[in-house]
Length: 238
Image 1 (tube, one colour):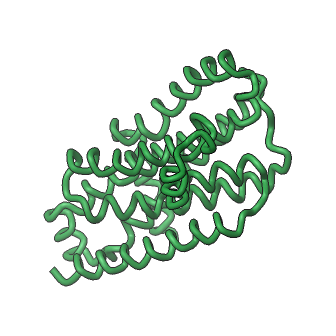
Image 2: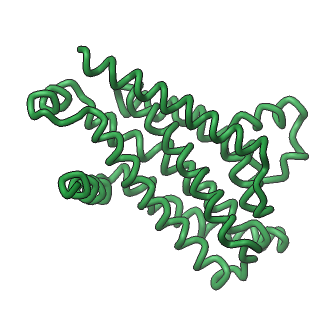
């Protein structure tokens, strides 16, 4: 247990020292929060009602799709994988360490947004804080699962950027954090149902559990877990 916790701590420190990961976990989300917070609240004062939720969705989506997979691509290069096998280190351990480290980092950023938005922008605090954080945690977990999939199945950072953007941009544009989903064409509104960002945002705003949204999030989590396990089994057999 001590070795496992120490591994998480080491990975957490490595994420802070990794420039690409640190930028997507902390720097860009916080800058975006400050910049867009001013714009949103200036253009539309009602944006204060959902500012915390929208900026949290942005931070989690960016961190999990563009930050978390980067570490896994580096960890599962051929040479390092061989070192794992020789050293008797389970191949699942880097995934778990990366997952927990990402969860901690992005929870910290989300907490920064939650605590500072009401002070800086007079943003509205969620009505049911417990439900808010439960939904936020579920959204963060499924997003980390998807990010872990990207990190395991994509072999280079350049390709990761391309594939991550194919999920990242639709997640933001179709989730409702930039503008109401009712303004979208029916086709795009239905496409948005497949992205966890939409359900995470809506449930964090309403502070209520949506059964369809929870089903989508849990289904994506289970599917991602199965695909991750299959990939790790493949790596172990090579």
